[in-house]
Structure formats: structure tokens, C-alpha cells
Amino acid sequence: MAAHVEGQQHPIGIYLKIWGLLFVLSTASYLVDYFHFQGYLRWFLIILFMLLKAGLIVAVFMHMLWERLALMYAILVPTVLLMVLLGIGALEADYTFLTRGVFFLKGLF
Amino acid sequence: MWIFLLSDPFIFSCLLISYMTVRMSTTDPWPNPSEVFGLTLFGKSIPLLLIAIMTFVLISSSGTMAMAVKFGYEKNRRMTFILLLCTAALGATFVGMQAFEWTKLIVHEGIRPWGNPLGAAQFGAAFFMITGFHGTHVSIGVIFLLITATKVIRGDLDHERPGFMTGRKGKYEIVEIMGLYWHFVDLVWVFIFAVFYLW
Image (tube, rainbow over all chains, first blue to last red; front, top):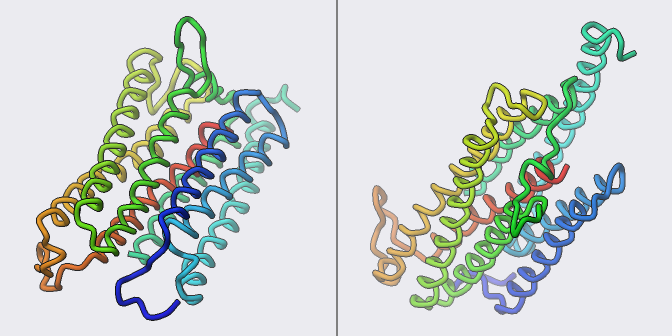
């Protein structure tokens, strides 16, 4: 964007549209629970709606779309690292569950 | 502000990742959030109703905040003030509903951080820690929203008066910074809503 003398200027419509979209997405994720979707379909839909909402908020409400590339990388790359930590945590949790099952609940396996 | 907004997700993700680990590794059944957080209205039990309303309240506050930032850049003092107040009111509503929810869980359902009658003992600890931390963020946000709104309506930003404990001139940029914080709080709620309540 050109030099920000007065800061950023965007038409008000874009905020209202994103607001509406966030409402639709929230309703959708609520309906996932309401209709009792289970298993992988549920998890897929929950994560999809979650990421879409998060993306909209960061990109438009927080003006990330109009920021310089360096800031985008500075914020988004560490967040990706967090996802790796999440994966490691999940592996570890599965292992703990397994050992607890083996040692404490002999009947389970 | 962006540096803070990078470090705060790490704190929240620590909480959420440990919640995930605890939930995956416990051998007791996890309480079904859909039933625990349900509300009974007119004799009919509706799952997650209160949480859904809280989600909409917080998203609306994010919408009003975004518009407050926009009017701030246009130096429209009155509209910025009104929208900031709306945001603060919605945020306070959210905290109020959360207090109601906590009361219901603690008093009526006997959920404690160390155990509960519904299933896995870790449920209470994870729930109170995560939502409590988020609620604290919202409460602090409401306080700062009111401070910012006062500055806007007093004309501190138009006259470039320096703020509290700083020699820098007041600018409408502080409304944007306030907005960044507030959107972040909303963002965290998006994640909590998905992984704690819906999962």
C-alpha cells in the first residue's frame, strides 16, 4: 500500500461482510454439534471452520493482508512451529495412554 | 504489539496442548461437553446454547472493534467512541455470561479443578485454567477499551496529548493497537470454542 499518512483506509463494507461471514461460520460449527456429527467428519468440519474463522480475523480485522511480508512471516512461521509441537504432544499422549492401559488396566488389552 | 501477540499464543498453546495431552492420555471417560454446557430452556435441553451465544457476542464485539479502528483513522471522534463503548459492553457481557457458566458448573454440577462427578478428573483443571485465562484477557481488554474510549472522546488523540507514563504524542494508532489485542482475544476464543467445547 502507499504511504500511510492517515493510516489504513478500507470501506466499511468489508468489515460488515467479514462480520457476516464469521456469523455464518460460527453457526455452521454450532450445527456440527447440534446434528451430532461424529468421528472424522466432525473433527474435519470443526478444524475447517476454526481455521477459516481464524484466517478471516487475522487477515482482515487485524489488517495482516495489508502488512509487509516480513511481518507476515514473523508471525505465521512460529505459529506453524506450534503445530509441530502439537503433533509431538499428540504422539506422546498416545504413548502415555498406551502405557497406562498396559500397566493399570490389564483388562483393557 | 505484534511481539506480544506472538508470545501470547505460545502461552495459550501451552495450555491447549497440555489439555490435549491430558485428554488423550486419561483412561477415564471425558465428560461430554455437549451435555455439560447445555442449557435447559422451556423444559427442552439445548446443547451448548450459552457457549454459542457467547461466541456470537465476542464475534460481534470484534466487528464493532474493527469499525472503531476504521472510524479512528478517519478521525471521527464520536463514532469511534460509540463503537469502542459497544465493544466494551459486549466484552463485559461475555465475561458476565462466563461468570454465570462458572457458577452453574461449580455450584450446581460440583465440578472442581481436582475432580468432578461426570468423569475424568482432569476436566475441571483444564476447563478452569483455559477459560479462566481467556476470561482474564477479556476483562483486561474491557478495562483498556474504556481507557481508550475516554481518551478518544476527550480529544487527547486529536490534540496529541501524551498518554500515561509516556512522552509520546497521542495518536489514533492506539485504537488500532487496542483493536489488535481485542481481535487476538476473539481469535483465542475461536480456538477454545473449537477444541474444548465442540471436540
